[in-house]
Image 1 (cartoon, rainbow, N blue to C red):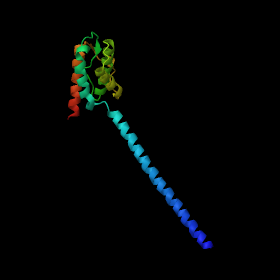
Image 2 (image 1 turned 60 degrees about the vertical axis):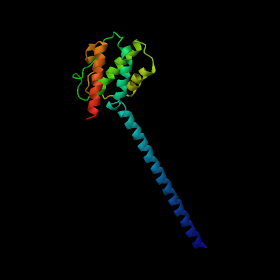
Image 3 (image 1 turned 180 degrees about the vertical axis):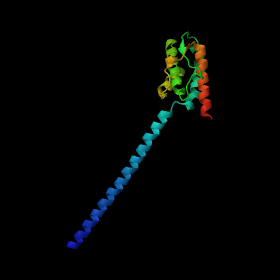
Image 4 (image 1 turned 90 degrees about the vertical axis):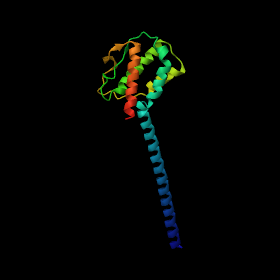
Amino acid sequence: MRRILKISSKSTCCVQFQSTCNLCQESHKTQVWLCFLVLSSLSISTCAASADNTRPLQFCLKALQNRIEKSDAMLYAPSVNDIKENCENVSLKCYMLELIMVLNEEEVNDTIANCIFNFNDILRPNTVGCPPCEAYSLKNITIFLDRLNNLLEKMTAQKNK
């Protein structure tokens, strides 16, 4: 009788141990998938506003151009030649901030203008080594829009290389 108890005790122990191992494996799989999900979402948000997304921005600018051109503001507008290597996104952020100011001053509050605000919200440039917006010259709205479009075209061309 004693011997039977020992055997059943061992088999219970083995079942418990095996069950615990299966739970660990399932937990490990869940952890791996959660890590994958978090890393995927982080990589999307850090790359969200780059040359990949400039086409919709160009479309918005064209749609808003007539209302934006009414502004008589002088705006910081770096030319493509003034922008240091790896500072395109910083300069683009400068353009977005200036453009938002113009939209607010001209009271442009429609859904097309939202694309400018949304693009600005996702644009997170690395500012290390790049000059601030105020380092560039002030230009009228016509030159500002021309230079902004040149920058967007340059960024699109670099992406397509």
